[in-house]
Image (cartoon, rainbow, N blue to C red):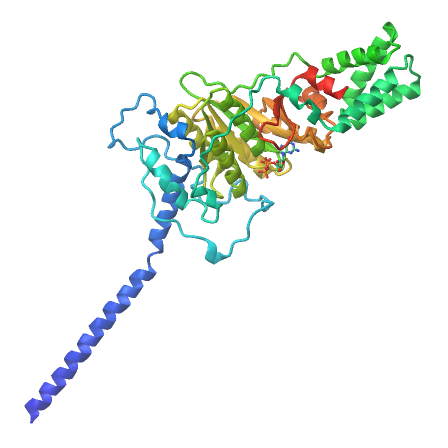
Length: 462
Ligand SMILES: Nc1nc2c(ncn2[C@@H]2O[C@H](COP(=O)(O)OP(=O)(O)OP(=O)(O)O)[C@@H](O)[C@H]2O)c(=O)[nH]1
């Protein structure tokens, strides 16, 4: 009897023990699944690092014409000592740019929409084509479907010669009005003080600014006193001469985008929001490709996701390479990667589109300075193009001054001259900063970009 009781007690104890062990195992398993986040963290940095170096390769010419990096054997084992993304924000502290306003078209995302990155793709050193395909899945999950099915149809591009002549009709009508009223005033011969005041007002209204206006009026007065101007044709001749001189035709307006033999040229495109930086970068790429150049576009506008998509579309249309970063990535790192990639691929020109930034936000301006400095660790920046919206008038000059201080602009692109712009800002920017206007945007069309030529510009004005 007692023995039986002991057996029953032992059996119950054994069952309880088994249940306890099983419970503990299950509990541990649950715990393991809960403690996965560290791996997710690892993915984050890995995904970020791999991101910048691979473009969404689109152009067939780009992938077939891959050149091995200069002086590098193509052994697969070599660890990728090419710049594994020079991360400049590893400290995890708030940094410049954090005070930025929300981009104008930023989609609102709920927390459940934010996708955790996949496992990191190892960064290959020698065959870039393969991972480039794997990248899109990781990049901006909410982005346009075009990423899945890249547009590969490459467009025919009109030759660039004589483009300003063809685009002349697109210069805004308001500019013609300025020319007309000036001709009307000067064509009458001797001018009284009221008429000179009117000339002055007309120039001021056309955004020439007071310094340039005074200079032009003084010169006109001088010339009118020493010549006989009786007809509108004579007035036109004089006015053209004076205005062209004021546009400083001696300035070097060549765009430094040709390669250096062993490395591509590097161009930074900067400016405030919405001036037309991305559009201009795309248009410039078209011009270069039309001239038989290989181009890589760097989408360092990581602030506005749509800007990178927009640039990618431009790249697809012309068959250029593109390097873009994850939304919110460090723009300096993306720009650095774009240049590294351009060197690896042996392209002729790397054009880097930067995020629009208000010149009044010092944090954003510091960030831009950083972009340039970081890029220069890889290759010198040949051209810094400041894109100015011609319709904003005087504010353009203020912007130009600040940008010139931060990144040493080498040229200005004046966009939207087809709109309500008066164009007088050309005179001011050049007069004040000594930086030439090199290109003008004359519309939203892909080929609506032209070199700036003082003669043709004044002709259009008059
Ligand atoms: N009419 C006209 N519109 C232009 C010209 N250049 C650009 N645009 C338009 O201006 C708008 C803004 O151009 P974007 O290229 O997106 O400007 P962005 O400077 O890159 O903008 P952010 O990335 O927000 O800083 C677009 O609708 C362009 O089509 C131009 O020369 N003429």
